[in-house]
Length: 164
Ligand SMILES: CC(C)(COP(=O)(O)OP(=O)(O)OC[C@H]1O[C@@H](n2cnc3c(N)ncnc32)[C@H](O)[C@@H]1OP(=O)(O)O)[C@@H](O)C(=O)NCCC(=O)NCCS
Image 1 (cartoon, rainbow, N blue to C red):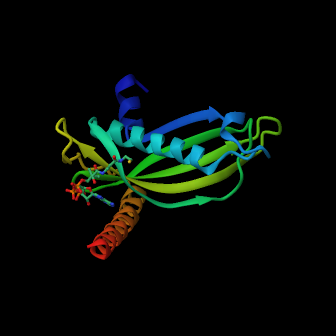
Image 2 (tube, rainbow, N blue to C red):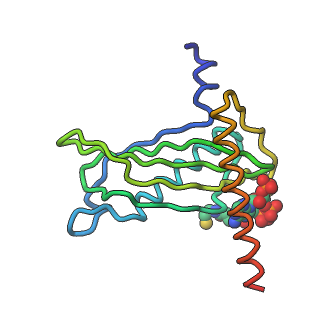
């Protein structure tokens, strides 16, 4: 694979990894949820920005679930995948996989969805290019993303009404 096709292949996906440190944990060695959510947010940002090549900010976070604990010394790997694009917003799914470096055991620890919005140089939402859909599977995931995104938007409208 040459450099150009590598860039195309990975432009809607990003992976970041780090070893969980004692400063991120409670006295029992469990990593704080917020530490991992920060990593997920960072991964969502990288995934969105790689697609739109503009500044991207988090507008909403949906359905973060903690499936299994993460401990000091575990290798945490976040994978961000862009699954849906609207006008200026992008829906990124984040999967967090944790590996125990003593036993080699791998578990899916967290999952979640992030709505990221592309901003222009003046900080205003700006259009992004549509996500390239190459297969029926891509189109199916895109449609699922669209439904989730619409549900998040509907919830936002309801909250805004309640606050008025
Ligand atoms: C996200 C933000 C840029 C949206 O600005 P806005 O003036 O509300 O702009 P709009 O109403 O035109 O929305 C722009 C897009 O964001 C989407 N959006 C904004 N808030 C959203 C939310 N809570 N959930 C889902 N989508 C949202 C809109 O649907 C729209 O999408 P589209 O262009 O694809 O149709 C603005 O609310 C903001 O700056 N928020 C703070 C972001 C931030 O700093 N995050 C870091 C963590 S604090």
